Image 1: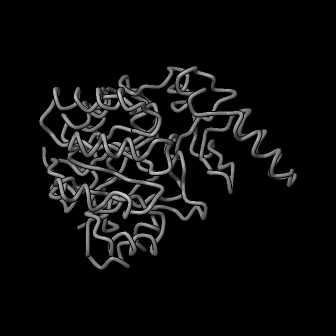
Image 2: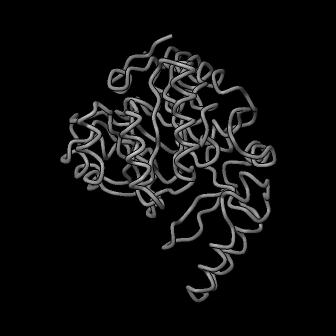
Length: 317
């Protein structure tokens, strides 16, 4: 099955379906390999990975498929320059950069033929990245898990605003709130060339997170996530004792030191690897409320594509 858009042409993939780079969940080869084999774009999350583990994951992906894949690189991470050197040496086909400016990586990766996508959360940043010469943009709205934009503007509005501001200069991928084929149809209707699916791919056997974390995603409703930690790397996460503690401190206008201490005491690793769903950061998007079954990642790709076609064929003519 093929659904051709500006993004599929740019990336050389069959379907306008990207699996988001999610720390721990896709900090491996298994999940992105399954997605890329199925015709989407699988993405390794380099954020928490040591260089040796990242190199192995890239090699395993290349050994498992000749289809394109990407590495998501948060530019603020410790040892970012070393990781960028590794990715350049590995000549990764697609680089997705976030939380930093394109000047830090663009020239060197364009020189080796890497397709460069940049993550943005507003029109001004989108135009700046386009002016620098990136190949495409991932626009992240307020529904997204992990680190949504502080203003929490919805993906519906933000994607449309960025598309209008760019006036067709480069392809756009919408991210935040997508879980199925109806969401993909909505993203394309807004003018994006693909949708980025994160939380949906957490509920897969290939996702590298604890089973208790996956079950928490499956059990969550659309109103069961919270945004906490404003001004200190705000996250969207499934409500648990950690988010409740943060909300109490924020509502009471507690001293910043107290809020920072509580925020730092919980980590994503605690939830993802240790299965601590009470004390860890259960990062997930509002689309968790649309995810109610666990499936292999390749089947999710196929399900999204089938549902998209059914939705489009069912629209009034």
